[in-house]
Image (cartoon, rainbow, N blue to C red; front, top):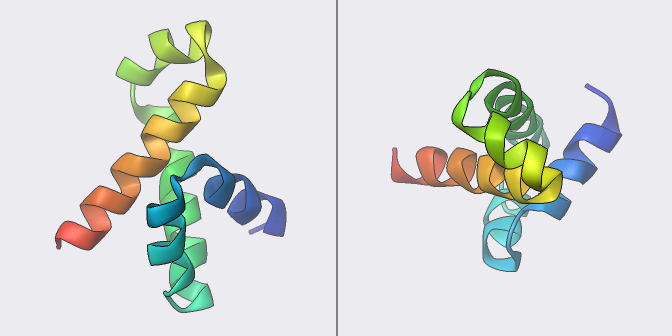
Length: 72
């Protein structure tokens, strides 16, 4: 996975979520970034938000991925 995907994922997170992700192993960080990309691509609810505000859609998808991972 390109490093820029992880960088973009981290940038889309709130500071608290970013710290949670950074505390994970590098491999897990990459898995979370890949899950974020999948969430952006697959979630049709984000399509409308993405049309209005691509940054807001990216932020929402990133926070969803973190919530799902840390609630396991």
